[in-house]
Length: 476
Figure 1: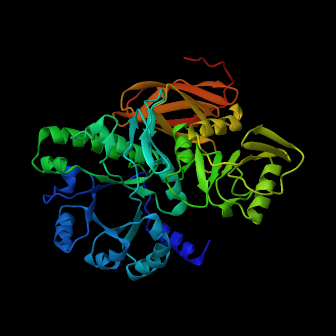
Figure 2: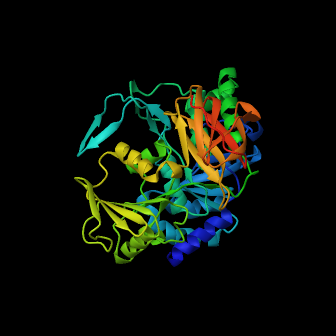
Figure 3: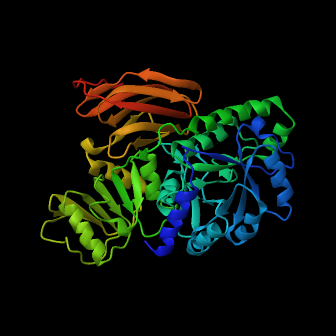
């Protein structure tokens, strides 16, 4: 890591605060509600010449005020006496950020500086997919499997980009739906799904509120307050500090040169509930990859990285090299051609698969990665969960401790889950019901199955380790 990169991580560690997920409300209406009424204390105001009076008014109403500014305006905005600065950073500004942020923090040591990725997607379930072929955009026909727009890949990339700060992102409600222009009124379920997604992924969210909702809340419209109270209950559900030290569990590593969020292969891994972590080529070593069974390399490896890949395979890892071109140290007489574009090499107790082309079918690619893991290495599986994304969390060096679920269909479903490990206690909670409902675990061959009777939008399962004898599971 460069010196500036080290400083950047150090700054984030200093200013970050422990919480599972924080919802920052972006407020644009002239009328401000007291923080006790809104129920959320972190308010984001956009920077303008008339910002200071609004900021002081919001602080008097009980808010922690954050200013959203572009990087070039940060120094001026930092003089206003707010709680923190939210910097809207795009990919092209990353290099400039590493130079500017340490200087900003040095000049304003008591001010929080948070980095916002503005390129999130509106979380939703769609029946079709927009596909780009060359310079032409087309819409696919409705698919048998629902298409989910999720921000999990973005969050994974942000975790690797800015270690020490919880990922912070936002998105626009605008755009087109499958049936035409976006619906004119956002529902409680729309907002709750957005909050649930960020919370389940242990990310922070700048939540954009529709202008009409802001206005009607200020007018104390009962219907609007009923909507907002549901959203507020979801935000409270994820604002936990009780189980600190949890880390996302994963046994697939995705190695990339560029930390960009548009890679559809990573999006499909997320939608197929294949837990993965994003790494850079410099992370390719046995120490960093001890807990991973499959390593997918989208980066162009140099000589040193190639040697590290060969060493990983020698020690039992399966490495998939995408767009492999050229001679590599593992190429030997043990090559097996799997298809027109894929060659497999046995290396020690592991193997390296070379794909000569980029991933053109992310759906099939995700399914292939699951097959490469093998049944005994799949961390979790869902049945009746085509609209659900699940994220497992573990304590350091231990088995899975918590599972977070998000149902993008926003309609109640009965979900069967299998998770690696033997557990004696399964406790289930949702924003709609207090903790916790006990679920019946069925243990078999190192895995535990259980049924979630109803998942509307958000749910959380707490797992306690089991040493009971194995019993035969039932399949529903």
